[in-house]
Structure formats: C-alpha cells, structure tokens
Length: 124
Image (cartoon, rainbow, N blue to C red; front, side, top):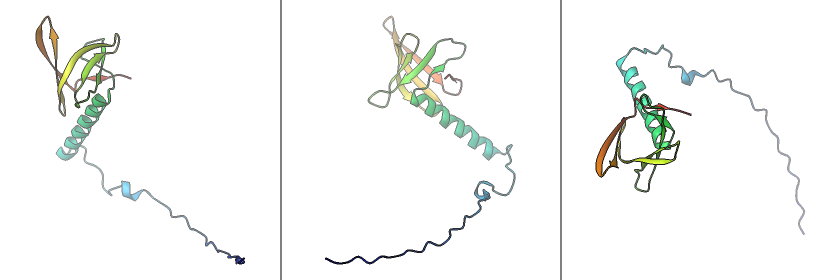
C-alpha cells in the first residue's frame, strides 16, 4: 500500500471588478428621429408580431369580438381556429413578414382571407 501525501492549496484573494455598464452606453444620445432608427424599430415590431402569430398567441380582428388563434400543421402551415367554440375557420396558405393568406370554403365556394399582422390585436 502506498501512502498519500497531503497537499495544501493556497487560494489567493479574488478582487471583484466594478462594471459600470459601458457596453450598453454608446457614448452619445440616440437620434430617435433618424430614418435608420425608425426602420429598425419597424423591423423589430414586424418580427415580434410575426413571432406572436406563429407561436399561437390569441388575437382579435379589427372591430370583432371573436378571438382566434393560429395552429401550426405538419408542413409549416396550419389553420386559424376560433377559440370560443374551438372551431376551424380557415386554412393558412402563406405566412409572410406582415401578411397571412388563408382560405376557407363557404357553400362550396373558395373564399380567400388575408390578414394584416400589423393591425391584429393580440390578447392575453
């Protein structure tokens, strides 16, 4: 049998570094009236609305009291469902950045539906 030697490890004192949040401050005020800032804000809004729709958050149409939600399907496209009665409303054929195209059949006729994501009101 071998004997184990006892080893003592010295731990030096760790100094904490003060962080003054400089990485979040570009050093100059943001010009909120510039065309670039406005364009970036619009792009961020469009991306957030598109994500909310694709996640299946409930929404209302303009002037409607009915609440709908999107349900994704196998091929990436799905359908729009009314949440009050859990009924199928329309099949989604295209999801763009700010527009969703869908269709439904009413009395044997195909009815095209187009939703503008910018005007949807998302509810909790």
